[in-house]
Image 1 (tube, rainbow over the protein chains, first blue to last red):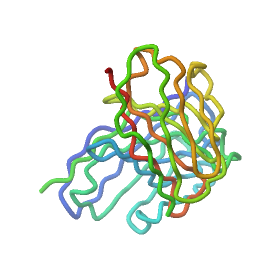
Image 2: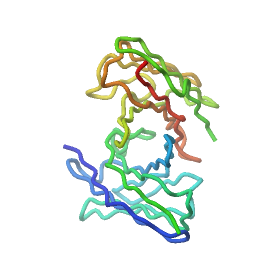
Image 3: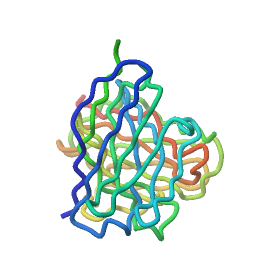
Image 4: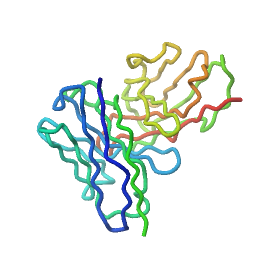
Length: 123
Length: 109
């Protein structure tokens, strides 16, 4: 079965960076995009960007360009999301999610989601 | 930017009720719209994609409709498992990015 397993909770100071991992299993890693979505306290969801695990190409939401980097390790089936210059506004649960329909399906929503990683930014 | 506006923000209903949630886009997104269900402490779950296509395994009491700027999610007969928060998402554009509606919490009347 498809699974996305994320790394554990992080506490960071303002100005620092955080790197969250997302290990995929149950399907061919290189055939589906991985998206990142965050959810700050309160209900709102915010799409951050996506990576094509096949070639490593990325598309970032305008808001996060210059501050986010998404990478992948095809040998382990893991995707990473690094967010820098953290502020308290970045305190949120960060989710990785698989793009529906495979890399050939653009645009696409997200079908399978990881369990989420809480990132807390506090001095 | 494409803004997504959901209404209502909270909906009180009883088991068996027909429930309708509306999502409006600030500009046309054709049918590039998805609906998700989220329960507390868990990740969102995809219910509907491309405005009206039910994701595999989703009960048939859920349905989506609309195109352009106006969309609806309907639950034909609300079940106890359906009390949750529902989000719409436009995925037409990657720049500035996919955007979600603010959410509709369906609670017990």
